[in-house]
Image 1 (cartoon, rainbow, N blue to C red):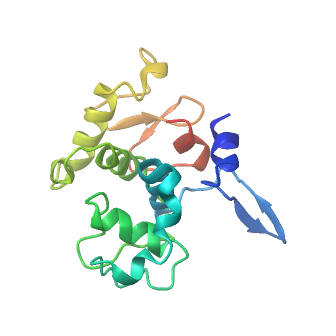
Image 2 (image 1 turned 180 degrees about the vertical axis):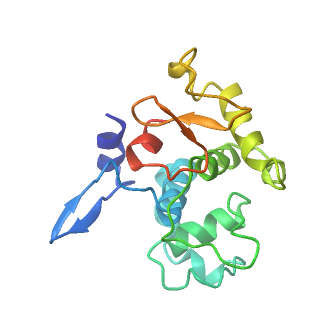
Length: 173
């Protein structure tokens, strides 16, 4: 499975619950976790170069200095993938919505982040992801609707792009 592959590569580590590390596929993907995944996607074998990146970064989100993901977030910020909330914060522990996840994946793939600003940013992200075939396995099911801003959840049911994206669903994109 994609989860097992990402775990074996060190991209996913799970979360600690009662002294045990668990994946919790239904748990929300956090903004810090998605920054780590994207950094791994882009840097590949060079991921070790990210250690300590935050210290020399021009990214100055006020809330990432003590985050375990600060190096990944700073790298993504410096590379035009992450913009934050527009008021100087990134919120690394907050859950990622489907729309935010799609936007970050598209920016990591080279799409201009400027396309995903303003009132239609979520619609643009969903439309671009759909055009790329990210939802091809759900074709004809009604689970994807670029006008109503609906995406498939892990079970293939339509949910709002503003919903929190579970780890399992994000890993399968």
